[in-house]
Length: 197
Image (cartoon, rainbow, N blue to C red; front, top):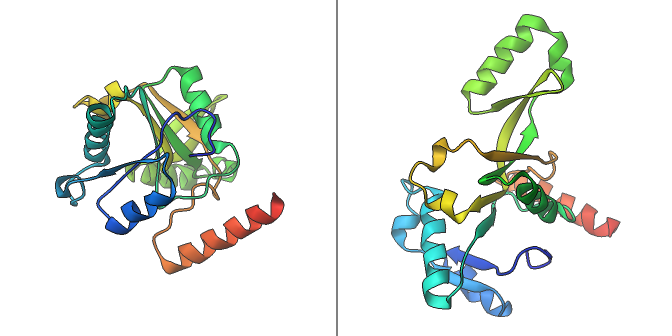
């Protein structure tokens, strides 16, 4: 995020002392200690965003227009990916931007009932359906990078808002780190990317 040309300020909001201590190495980064109420299982990610935005505005006198929120468990952002997402968000004049990956290749379109049953099962699991050039395509939301207006973030009915931009990312950018094997895969990808630079 610090390398982005489109982000004015970076804030790390967490309840982890180790992370906050490490931020001393980055003096330009604002920090915010989240209260337990924002970190328990029943809290949603917007609770933490609201608290952090209020802290930034009240303690630092900032006016927050947009929130760009990468997910700590999906850390692989290829060169310029975040800036491309921001540019699309601004171009679409959206209230929010959600990263997605395509779940089913065009192969499934040739398999009739088998495709339809898989399609319906995927939609019921929270995937989203879009129609592109007359053909249905199925996507699954990823938290690789989400962008919100502050109005969207503060609105209690945020989950019903329909003005959401879809930003497609690759399977690599959508890697989710949940297990030790995921860490090993992410490290291998990062090493490969560094060799390409």
